[in-house]
Image 1: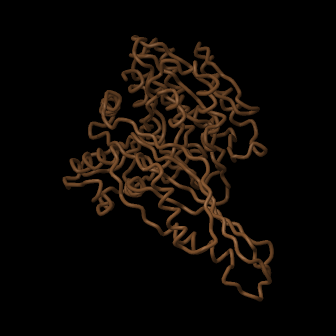
Image 2: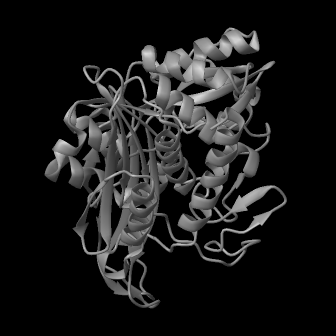
Image 3: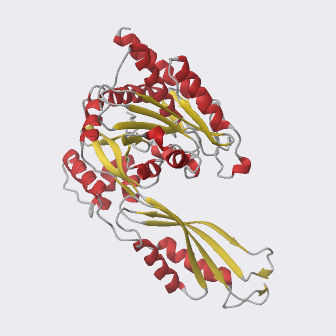
Length: 443
């Protein structure tokens, strides 16, 4: 098939598959009692597309309605470590209130594809399927083994998805040494060039419960040992606490690349003073410089005129590589200094992920970009959230975040994750699959 015709079909299938996947309500509430079979239906659709192209993918449910799929395409040099390109098929809830277009209708308007999952990340799932089908159609053999993987449950921690696969079907990922998936790849203007952020590190994730206890009683008789006010003081103290800037390999490399592109000498310690130069990347960079704690949930009392004897708050913690343990000790000290009667209990901690910020895969990403964007420059950064790469690490797989998107300078791709009117520019979706195909073929 002529190159132009093959590329046209690759782009058309990506859009068609993305729309079909968005129309499947695969919402992951985090509560098994309220999760339907959307993830399994999405995986079945993907399996059908791959089987139609002559492949035999491996699929299995980790729980009713929660399926996972992998497909291995043998490369020219199977002695090399394989690369897994993965996407998740679940999405976060979407209240249709405020949306310009229904979140599960996959409507196209004004050059955008709207819908929950348009960016996070049914767009990439569709692109991976289209790439695999193009290879089968055109007889393309990648340089090394490529494993296409599609997981459930990423939005609630990956327990029934990537983690289940690593624990129960590790043979599916046999020989894999590197992974590429979300979150990164979107372009940001940096000087005269476009920087394409590649997540070479991820923050760890933790949670804690603050419990304040005091004297219960009638609301008409105020008490200095009120559990609610004790909790409130602790929550404000924790929420307003600023952790120190910590230099990590990812942010050191970001500062170096940004300095070269902007013509301004930047270091990790001075990045925060120049966020205005980074455009839409500014908030991401700021969040990657420090450990952070965000109070997210409060609970106390059962009636207005009753002073409760106990009040609780939930904290979300994000931990930089190399600071494990430091955050916990700092928060405990802040809580203790806020006043008496408040205890803290730590739960689930996901260790930070740190991968080399330079190497052959990053070089391959740079080369794959140049065919479509001669002004594109790979810029490593530290992703302040967490992805399925954390689970693949258990098998010794080095993970990176790169889903290529060339967009206008004011289009905040990451800002639309989980947001109202999640959408992707149609030209960015076409760009994404072209670059992804080259990367996976050449890497």
